[in-house]
Image (cartoon, helix red, strand yellow):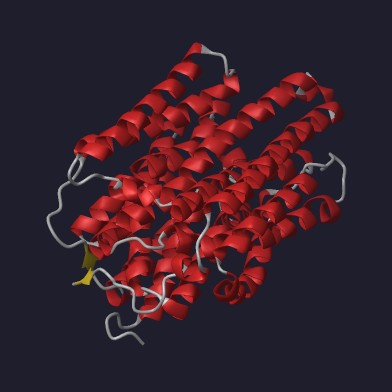
Length: 481
């Protein structure tokens, strides 16, 4: 056991639980949306924003959350984020209308933006290098990869057996465990030296990411619309302004050295694509299971199990391979395996057998995700100075959440275009189910293309020796208070 950080394996359990909560909350309400929409009278647009509000607030505020954790103290930020997450989750569970639910989900995302980078930064300084670090990041990465699908299963169980509101109330249980475990097993750490907040950078990046994601959400109504183009252009301009600001200020919110390192930049891009698949594509899987195949929420949740099971069963093998192979071969092959599963899933039919048309491709996707997520979290933090651990962790998390937000919007636009081409209505019965299936298939194929691009990114950007890409024991850690 480390002399610096006692009880570090207990700390790993606490931090892994945190990662599970943050990731599964991106999808746990997905499977409950039909029930929530019916009870609260949500429009289809509001239904989408129940998912988007969480991912958008989370992704837009993560960089600021990372810097707060670096400067204010990572354990302190973790505990405040955990407490706030529990309070707003309870409020969302009692929501009386759609607006309250959407606001609660947005606030969940805001507190998750404090929680997630603090947790990953604490993991980084608790396990600075060597075999123990590989094991810790393998556990953490596996949970990141399986968490979205676990959210679908848990959401189905709670919606069917209790009530859709328990998809929010259940967070309170996780929060209590996280607060007690965090207080007992986590050690405070913070960045040393003079620390000043980059307020202008924080405002610019939050508005830029918000405009970009909102622009993509409007694409469902048409890519050529003035408001769609306007918000997308505004987002790009604000993000370009953010980069310029970061190159000029003395203590930037995002030191550009973090994202200009080629291997780390590759890891962030792969996470962005993986997030779009795990958050965006899985939503349309739940719609197919419930609307086309007629499954209950519970059955649909259980039907999603091959995805997380595939990840969890293959992850130990990947963990053993990682020290000898290094991350690059895994990150080239993993996305291709996920893409193969998505292409397989793209041939789904309205009346096909679940085992052959859904379960098998989901298991293939899950196995592929193990090859992606086990090395990814480690690689995203390779070579990061202790002073920047929180903000680098934030970029890693932000890539996945923003990817999920953009992916959900893009897949929705693709689905809407496919449905418009089919020209069917609910009154058409079987023809309408066939049209729905065509729309879902289009999203799965689009997601497969994204994963192929992720493999190309790994091939071209994740370069270097195993020693360069995987920190060894004895690496420097941040100041522990």
